[in-house]
Length: 321
Image 1 (cartoon, one colour):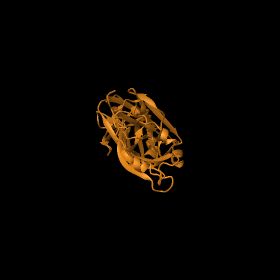
Image 2 (cartoon, rainbow, N blue to C red; image 1 turned 120 degrees about the horizontal axis):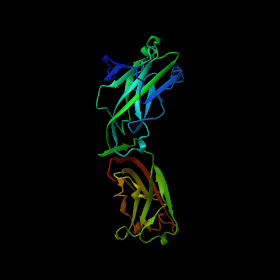
Image 3 (tube, rainbow, N blue to C red; image 1 turned 90 degrees about the horizontal axis):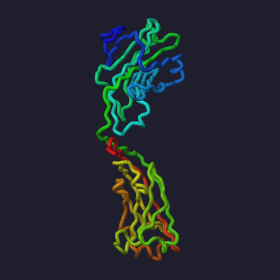
């Protein structure tokens, strides 16, 4: 223990130890004037500017009237949060020990709270914030005899010490959509008799963060003959990050331009860079498509509708380039 510090025997319910220090925090000081205005204006969460410690950027986060999501309404909640994590390598992990300070303005000393864990807390992509839900009760904080809030002013601080860093390993994240929105794209093919004999592609359309297209094989994909093949495909599969899979539910329709007897197929498929397209090699026979009493091909025009909804996406972090 450093000179000028004394340790309290009482530990908080969250596994934090209280102590006092004459030395100010080494890495950041946050002076809040007119603290009560935060509560008056319903500021539930205040984030400080960024500061650097241990080679990373951090923020102090204050809930002046308690973190409601943690049911800490009778307390001040204080956290340390990593900032600017988008610049870190995939699969990053940082173990950091930290201390949160609060100035006792009566005695010019600092109350210090720190985690009992000597090996630090693990910060990672899914947990960028650690701290104290019940840093201090509002009653204790507001009592002028304690010196923490005087003339509506208070001073917080932080020290952060990085214990270990890790960028290896893989993490897979699956994000599903509870109620996906369908997107419709209509493709009108004029002069059908002159389309590419092997494969014709629709215009590219965007759904979510990905580009798509419809592919038509007028004489069947793979030379099956007597059929038209129709598929949905990723337009730029080579641009997908490694391990990305997209769960798509789609319907392809050839529209009957004389009636409502549309010809359709519905499927659900996981698209990826290695499996960029899916559909039907035998979507419709030439005999049905060219039938004159139907409007699937009318005046050498064919209309195709793609109805597409993204139901989920898997992303992998921590891969080797």
